[in-house]
Every structure is written in C-alpha cells, then in structure tokens.
Length: 198
Length: 198
Image 1 (cartoon, chains in turn brown, red):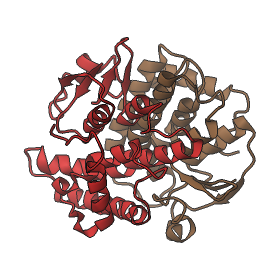
Image 2: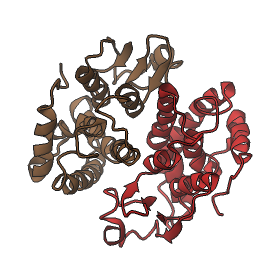
Image 3: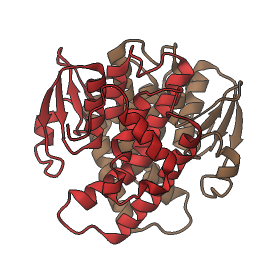
C-alpha cells in the first residue's frame, strides 16, 4: 500500500497507528501541509477532498478521509467491533472527532505551531472556546468509561487520540481534564503503540 | 425509537429519510436549533455533543451523529453495502460531507435563512468559497458516477443529499453543477423518498 502522508498531521498519524497495531507494511509518500499547490496533480484523482491521508491499495483503488481508512483497515480485527450497536458507537466518536474536535484543536495547533505568521487572536480565542467544550465532553465520558466505545480500545480511541494527545501544542492545558490524561496513558500502553513522530 | 429532531436540520432529515426507506416507525421530539439552552438537560446524557439528531433505541441505548445513526439503521440493508471496500467508500463520502460540506453549506443556509440578525458578509463569503470548492469536487465525481459509492444508492447519497439539495437556501446556485442536479433528481426518484418538510 502507499500512504500519502504528512509527518505532522494527526489525521495521518491515525492511519500510521492502526498500521502499527496490525503490523501492516506500506510506503510513505510525504506531502506538505503548508504548500498545497501540487495537491490536485498528485492526489486529485485519488481523493475528492485532495487531502492527506490518502491510501492507495495494492490493487490501485484509493481511499480518502482518515475515518474511512481506519474503518477499512480495522474491518475484521479487534479494533472494530462486530456488534451493530458497538460499531455505531465507534462511528459516533469518529464523527464527533472530525466535526467538533479536529476543526478546533487541530486548527489551533496548526496555526500556533506550523504557520509562520502571527495568528488572528480572535480566531485562536474562538478555537480555544470550542476546543475546551469538546474536551469537557470527552472528560465527562472518560470519567465513566475506560475507552470511548464498546468497552475496549478501538479505532474510535485512535481517531480521538490523534489530536487530543498533542492538544497542548494548540494551547490547551490538559491538566484540567484528568480522565482524558489517564485515557491518553491507556492508549499509549496498548501493544504496538507508536508515537506521532515515529 | 425516539428521535430528538429538528424539522429544519438537514442532519435530522438524513435520519428521517433512511427511516422512510426502511419503513421504520419512530416518535419525533422537536428541539429548537436557535435556542439551545435546554440541550444539556434534555439530551446531555444521551449524546456527548448535545446535538440533534439523537436517536434513542427501544432498549434505551442512544446514539448521536447523523453518520453513526445512518450506519446503525442501514446495517444489513441494501443502503449499506457488505463489501469492505464499498463500505469504506461510503464512509469516505460521509466524512467528507461532515468535514467539508456541512460546515460550509449548512452553516451558510442557517445564517441566511434561520438567524434574524444580518450575517457577517466576510463570513458568508468564506463559507461560499469553501462550499463551492466542495460542490466542484462532488460535480467531478458525479460526472462519472451515478451515485457516490459502490455503484448504487447508499447512505452516502442520503448523507450528502441532506444539505446539497437545499444549497440554494445558503446562496449556492446549483445551475453551475449539472451532474449534481441530475444526481439530486436520481435521489428524489428512489422508492420511499420523502422531502425534508415531510
């Protein structure tokens, strides 16, 4: 398989993490997340959103969207449950992450850490407010559950972990979220875990 | 089943549409999308994001996120394919919709049609630019495919149809996207189809 990748993207890291757990081999093809001028040319025919991660299977078929790629790779493994309700719960947290968490925490991190210009302070403030609301929702759930869905470690945890564990780089202090911090440790303790910079 | 619903929300409509196709009975419980002050009290324990749609099953278990609810209800029906790659393609378009399409087209529609105050013109301009980019990606795909994934009508089409067919209410002229318009007609021609205001 070939993964169109970015070493700093939490979305790409999710794919690398499930591949590490499943011991899947793949070729990494790094794309810039600051200069996107070659995107249409390189992955326009592979992914309608022209974003990384984009995965090309050995037979040439391709998939975009980290959540779809995780679902594909985890199908039939312990990381994606078979029970219909458990699966739907996994999906709930994955959609929650892409709709509520990523657009706030990942974008704040990107603007503060990877963009040269000084970011608009009002925008950062809005992203912080929305990001904290998301972290509070996570905290409430993780106070009562060891993992996000199905009572065990699944691709829902991988998806939410991607940016949550580097939220401090977006200016979020996780000390206010002790259950989230304990869950981060539980994820890092899973067999086959690799860090984002591996 | 009980659906915490909003008659104007495209996300809720997706759930009502799959229920119509599958002839599933449920009770509708309308929540306001402009006054959200009672959300924590009414659905805080049912959905971490405290948004509609939220579905409560007959056994009391609940699900949030339209994409997760669609997956749950369509499991084992023709609207969610069994093949692993086909399923992942369905998921790709559903994540694309929630990440790229909904935050631009649905938000522009909401600000222009359902909020009393005059919206910030710069924000509307940004939403328009990003929304048109999404519609162009849809158009490219639908020029070559009758439906979004797996060569047939699936929950991917339902998810993307939810806000695309009312994009004109967000100021998007669909005449520039003839393949999208033909696909909208194909979706409306499906057996059991119901309109958003049914």
